Length: 224
Image (cartoon, one colour):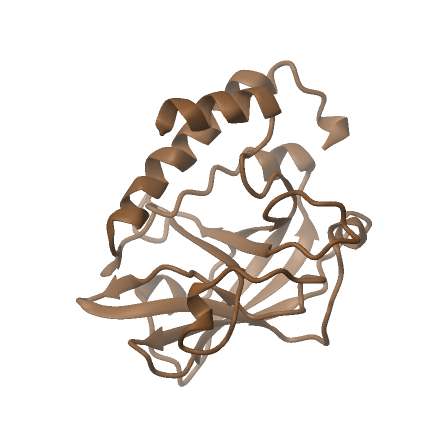
């Protein structure tokens, strides 16, 4: 799988999935009465990428991605990356990718579970703005993100509970956004990926990053 993802990303000169995105500096603030993972328990300044899963034309609904990195939260170079996609809110639909008309249209979910100190949990988010929200073309025109999201945690099959708030600030340069090599295996502090599918995601993401790096030197960032 790793050679396949490396070659596909090199030929496409973009990610295999979520090829088009916009990045922002963020502000992550813990919810006072929330109880969750260590990475979300204190104020921090993540780097955020909003994207569309399959790169379909913007007039077509496409599962939307909300991904961000909390840098160095577990020590130098030890990041927490969280990759979420538009999904359902219920116990069954939170494991499903659902197409979205904009970045505030549906809730977001990690789709696959984590263990938090041995307990099975899901992580998600909910936009604090009316649906459907902006599209990628709208976000590319903004100097400031102007959006806020609740970061959510569900223990087992329980309802979602807020643990933090993520607000989007200054837009990142396109090159910085695309070189943000988000990897779901970047985790720690008692938060661990669960299951074989999660285990194979890491090598696929890293291979995609390697393929893009091979192509970046020949790519014009003005086209991103």
